[in-house]
Image: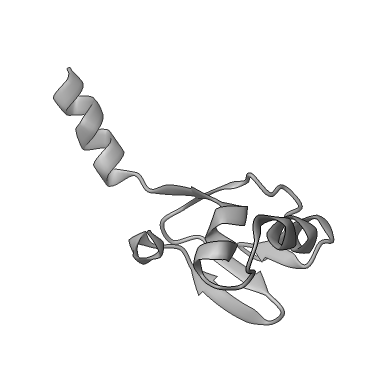
Length: 76
């Protein structure tokens, strides 16, 4: 049963929006990411999202100031 759970974890990739912005170099700090997100300057899959803890998965598209970033495992 534990092996099955680990297998599920390997196939699903999740990162929080604020962490993603920091790891991609869009922001330099968590505070900066929080401000950017909560001010409505970030879109997730084409819609403004103000939740800094929004969970992103593989293939999601994050847009900030007309630049698009695709979520994948390379950010880890």
